[in-house]
Length: 306
Image 1: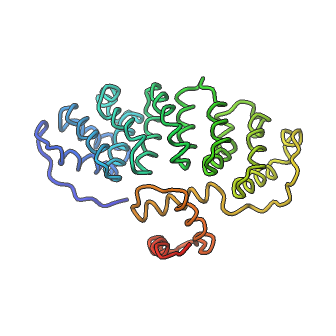
Image 2 (image 1 turned 120 degrees about the vertical axis):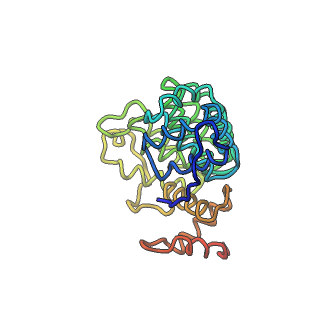
């Protein structure tokens, strides 16, 4: 947990924006502490609190945006401040979170997706749906969470148009993301799962990816199917060419994890396909190990020629 220096507080109504922002950021040292949140909310008019949170979200600063989103999210979903929860739907905070779906920073986009899904209102689904084409082309590493929150908010939304768009996307990273989305979360999000086994509806998409032109996508899809081959559903849909039970390298999840680690450690704001492939090559040649110095590990990546 981060240690923070807190400036002295002022009476209610006298806090300047910077003072209030400092207290909001301090919430990370007081997670789910109702007394702390109540104290922050009571120290300034609710509209001033909303303006400060929105300003932090729009600042372009990753940590400030994360701090503001976390404070707003917990104040609402854990009932830490009924006054703020009542104000939130009409506040600039909600508008700023929706704007941050297209933020320049990868983690800011991710945090906005999760906060909008968890806090609501359900009308947030239309904003998630609106940015789906952009994420499909520019940010496939956040597609799983985007769809998860979209379908959570809009239970009656048709899944097929989104899944079809992903499985036929030109970008292989986008096609690849559907494996974890369907097989790791499908038991909750998709119909037809019985006793933890996927239906033909789910397997149809995975089977298509087992024939994908990109070797990484094809390898993981085939491996995933070998892990399921004992189920009745897979026996009803036999797949040829399942030759190995060895987990492929990389998998989408491991690459997603390492890209996130690099972006956070380096403070780089975003990624592209070339960076993802350099990271995959680097991690393949320099496997991470328990107890390593993560900062030194990624500092060496800067001089990697891949």
